[in-house]
Length: 156
Length: 326
Image 1 (cartoon, one colour):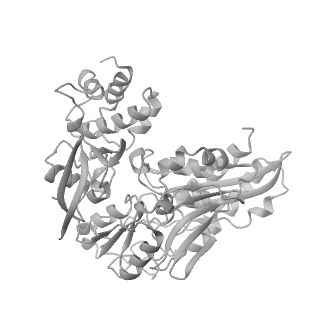
Image 2 (cartoon, helix red, strand yellow):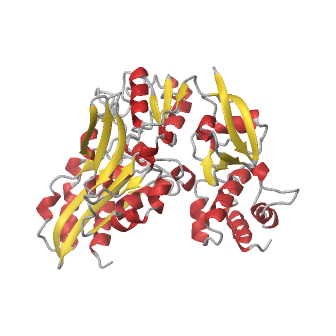
Image 3 (spheres, rainbow over the protein chains, first blue to last red):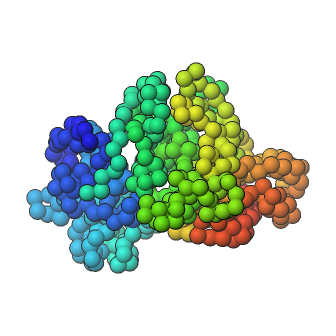
């Protein structure tokens, strides 16, 4: 498959890679950029494990073509911490035990980060709505909601 | 790695460029949000030789208020953008409520109005992986000879599952279609056929470019949906209603459904209820109009009889809600 140059920003750094037209964003992130924090849980946009932010808005990377993000700012869970310090959302998941097996956690953290940027003080209903497309196989939803609430309140 | 089959990705900047690419690549598929197409490509039920990404066409991305009133909504406007536009939430609540009920927040960031109107039909025997379908000798809609829903017939009964179409139908919306011989604008209902394998009457070289909504009618409108997984699923059934009443007397009533047939259905005969006094009796009369006009089949996990009951309950409840004092 012929490759063409894809230019985009991943976690604040500009990148240029030769990428085939049919490559999914999640495969680009994991296999080309080496960012394996983003997970693949299903094959149809049903589980939310692959959620990343594109221009600050949540996006399912397993049903997005990498080339459709040309020129965009992509953020993954690897970009949350700065200088070794966890982001508020990451801290919330850590302090409130929002993570069990951890497989859904990167997607949850990115969907929650997208929500808090648009709406820094969401109600519980708004948090539930924003995370409704993210499935936790360990069913730890109560602690996940508490984690996002803690992040919003800045209490962690 | 989970590579998709090979295809060319074409990214036109104008509708004319897109139309030219459509002519040069008759087997190309249009890509907007990809929440339907990419999933189907992954499942092997769509194998496009080329994919035309229409997100770079500025004309398809805007919502404008034409001089004559109403709204023109570009086909590639995302559902998230629809939900954030006050002109829509205030004047066309049925459309807003339908958009809010589509999948989950991350889907709505990319899923588009045009994509939802042109959504592929869905079936238990079709939306499956390659090995699942091959073990079942495929089906009439894709690669096979038999419809597993109705094996004795030669029709595909995959269900239309878009949420926005019934809302656009009751709001009297028309769609703008660009083609090689210029454009045409038709009532939304005219682009559909009740055939699961060929439910869209759009030529291969045409592109749905916008939806026109007429000036907001006085009265109320809404959308109600039933689904298995409340957070994310396609509808078992969905109902949109637009109505107007004056002093408790019904002056206008339009009802449209999704999930029951291979195309959205605008219920015929609701005008016969105009002039009646709003109440339980009219709600009941409305519910009795539905069964003859719909045909839910065993194309989902829930049996057709159950979906018939669900549709009637949805319509009754939404009618009550819209006729009660706001």
